[in-house]
Image 1 (cartoon, each protein chain N blue to C red):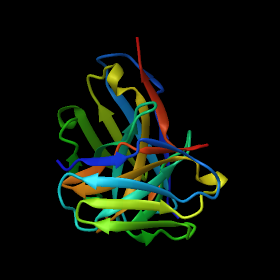
Image 2 (image 1 turned 135 degrees about the horizontal axis):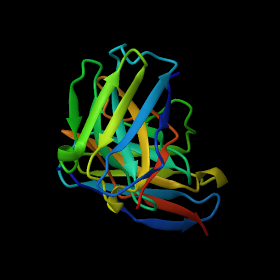
Image 3 (image 1 turned 135 degrees about the vertical axis):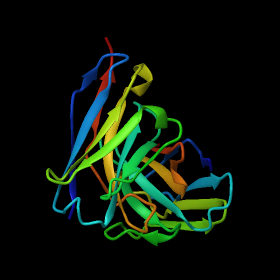
Image 4 (image 1 turned 120 degrees about the vertical axis):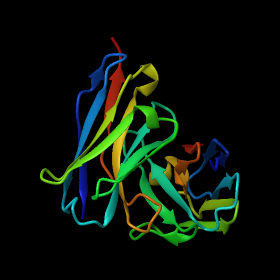
Amino acid sequence: AIQLTQSPSSLSASVGDRVTITCRASQGISSALAWYQQKPGKAPKLLIYDASSLESGVPSRFSGSGSGTDFTLTISSLQPEDFATYYCQQFNNYPGFGGGTKVEIK
Amino acid sequence: QVQLQESGPGLVKPSQTLSLTCTVSGGSISSGSYYWSWIRQPAGKGLEWIGRIYTSGSTNYNPSLKSRVTISVDTSKNQFSLKLSSVTAADTAVYYCAIRELGNYYFDYWGQGTLVTVSS
C-alpha cells in the first residue's frame, strides 16, 4: 500500500502568513492527490483534487502543486477561518490518507 | 446536492457488532453515479477508509479490516450500512459516510459523522 507522509505534523502561524504543507507518497501517484480541511467536530471538506485543481467555492488563497511523489498545499495569506487540520489523500487500490497537519494560531 | 446522515448506537460492547446506517437525501443511491463509503477517525487521530459499496452491491474493503467488515445497500430506503464485528476499544471512533463520484478518487460529500464508543 502507498503511504502518505505529511510534514510538518503541526505548525503555528499568524494571520496573513504564507503557509506550506508537504505530502510525500511512498510511490509515484502521478497527480492523483486530494487535500481536505477539517475543523474540530466537523467532517473533512474537499479543497483540492488532482493535485492542483481547486474545488468549487474554495477561496483562491488555497493552491496545490506537485506530481509523482511530492506535493504541497499552500495558503497564500492565512485567514482566521483557516486554522484547522489538513489531510492529503491518494487512491491506489483503495483510498489512503496522510497523517494530517494541524495549523494553529501563533 | 446530496446529503448524508449517519445513525446508529453510540455505545457498543466489546466483541459485539457495530452497526451504522447512512441515509442519503438529495439524490438516489440507485443512480449509479457514486461509490458509497465508510471512513472512520479515532479521537485526535487521522482518517481511515473502511470500505465502499456500489449500487450493484459490489464492495471493496480496507485489507486491514476486511475480515470484520460488511457494507450493504438498501435502495428501497436510500440507505447503505456498515457492520463491523468483534469490536474492541481500538474501534472507538467517529464514523463518517462519504461518497465519491464514479471515476473520481476523492470524496465529494461527507456526513457529519457519528461517534461510536466501544466499552463495557
